[in-house]
Length: 230
Image (cartoon, rainbow, N blue to C red; front, side):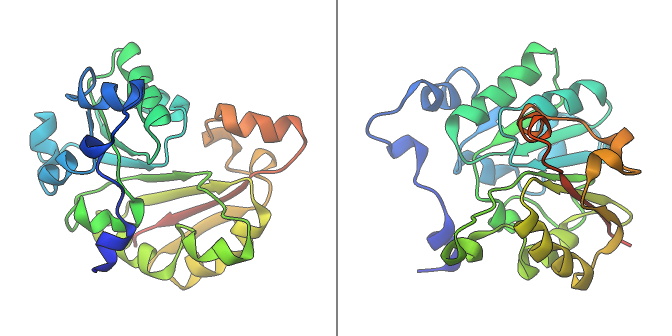
């Protein structure tokens, strides 16, 4: 069995008891959101799928959660395309629904494992990438499942256009301390990082998500790094 097959998700269309969010992905929102099979057809052709020119910037958000940042970003940057990846059906539908309710026509969602980005995009196809609060996999035996790994960073670097940025933030100190050395030895240039985002030079550019607010109310800092393909 290939690595891709081992990491890939169960097929949405084969689920025996689809819930309302599965049905929404296959039905109501199928024009705007794609399951793990349909999305493969857009590799190298996302701009054509959006009906925009090849010069249009296309950003990626990995792990959109309930979609507040996703919808905000799409609404405030209508001149750019935005693709979101999410594994779970409910937040996937919440994300695209928020964007559409805000009147956005420049957003799409897909259910796919972000470790396999090479399945979805080609060299230099992506612009800015957002990785906000990825699953920290806190048990030591689960650390290997964390998204930020050497190969992932190398793959992502290949898929981004030159001079583009990656924005990473997490509420997990442990995850951040493991990720920061990986960022530094990756092909990326680390433009800056902080262990307290909201009391840093990066605070003004930050969109505070609903999830992030939970930790801020507890007085827990947010960890942040900004990378660039230079």
